[in-house]
Image 1 (cartoon, rainbow, N blue to C red):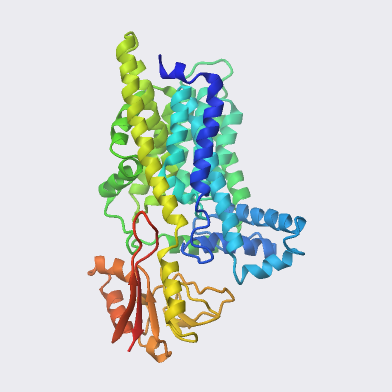
Image 2 (image 1 turned 60 degrees about the vertical axis):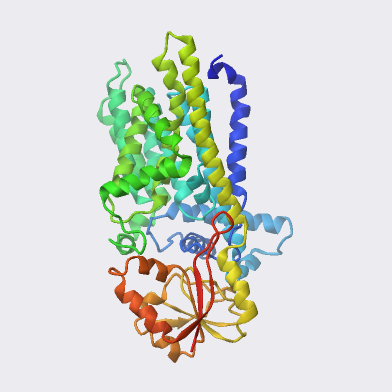
Length: 536
């Protein structure tokens, strides 16, 4: 009996619900990680900007680094809906109460934004299965959805209020529409694909590279002989116009506030980054491929990838997906920086590649039943190993996020051992002291030591003490304790490149006593390497 017979069409929908339920559980369990502390350095951008858009009714977010505008707008809409719900059910008397709470303890808003990310993450599982179904059978389509449901990288970034989950959803939907354009070739499909691509661009600029998928779909479509084929220029023109129009809808001020766009893009386009400078094209490409296969699904994924690629190479409708995945992967590998999260938009497409292995036996042994069944069993075992590895890694990630972060544990030590009223210097990745009990200082973007005067209960900074212009300012300000995160440790791994920063840390600390040090425990919790010094 074949796998197709084991999973009859009438069971496909219930099986898909099971897959979605598993994906939802993994993404929603531990979604409150870190709160009320703000441990992700990027989340405040997409939460604070969204709140300001909603509160000021100014649709210009005044930041276009990703550009991330559509994510900011989506979060703002979610905040509005949650506010209306809170008033209706009586949690608050008026919306202004929530607005005041944002500036003191905004955990509620971060949780809502994470729910938004998780929703897009769960929806991507369904779209991945639908995309696979365009050129594969029911079972491989479900397999692709299951692989994405348990993919640890996708699970993790579906719990963070950033652009990654929404961007991946949009590019996967775009790939689906490209396949529809290649299969049917109606102008409506080209318009829809162009519009979704425009929305993806308003989320993250590199989405432009994904246009290679639509170009490939156009080539595939043009090679089909059909009487109702439109003029060759029409699909291109309509897709381009729809892309520009949707990009404007998703991020209007990306066109209207171009000076700010140039400033933010210049800030994001740095050539080096602590711990994330690219090792070069080939090593970077190898690192991304390992993240997609070995790191996510184990050694079995390498074999499955080879077999699945052999299947899809023979499927005409799969060519846009292969072109999109390959083009995007080559592009991010050529950049000056290397972030593992940059490969997430390609992950659903790679899950389809892996799941395509299930159709390899039928292709190789079309006339021989016994070898075909044996091949299907081997393919099922390989993909089962991939799923098991992904599920184990994701479950471990969930368990780590549900536990107290290492910085949270350090904060409790601070509350118990550092006298209230003490002056403390902190940096990104360090514990976040209670502003009501301590005077907290940090380095600002200009390298100046400044006191945290924000109304937020827990002090937060994105700067590090290695950027201080005058390390002596720490002692001059009467600071008694210095709390460090991972920055110094990362610098010490590249001493030649960050000699100046390391020297500033040494000057800042001078004679000091290490009074607390802790590291997160893999499989138990997460966080940074925390060091707390008392200046002598």
